[in-house]
Image (tube, rainbow, N blue to C red; front, side, top):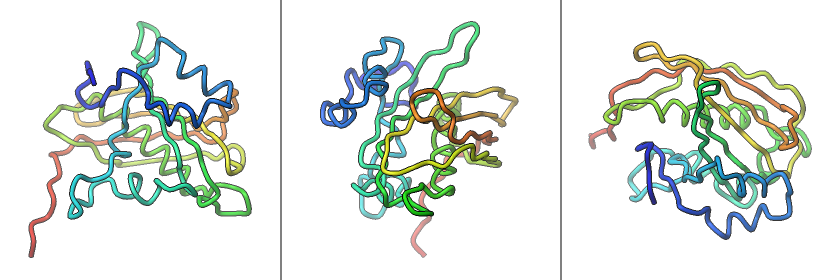
Length: 197
């Protein structure tokens, strides 16, 4: 793994098994073939190294099953003079995320927007700090049917001191926005596990 963004765990190549799970979806394969995208492993998807750790367990364990998010690939696109950098998630959803029949729960979509915008904020935070969500607003544009494959993307719009404002979308991969959100993240001291009482 190589990295020019220390908060991202870049891969030289995406995992072959994960790539195979998306191989029947033309728009998804285009992401794997896009030379402007660098694959990385989302820290929120990495299972804790010890059983006593409770960091990121909601996404890395609870939402990492065949019925929830069975496959996940993250990409990073560097910014240009006219566009900010972008974090992209490719997600394969099962029906264990439903609120209504065959429709993903809105709270789940909020979690994905919080995670993808939070990853964008993490790219710019100081190495010895962490970020926390202070505000998240989500607009639900269309119902999200399950099972299906989704695209989530996020970018930062402004940084002022410890405050980072970002935006994100959840899309169908063909350009239709299903939900979008805006968030404010605050840079905080790194959080450590609580000491045993």
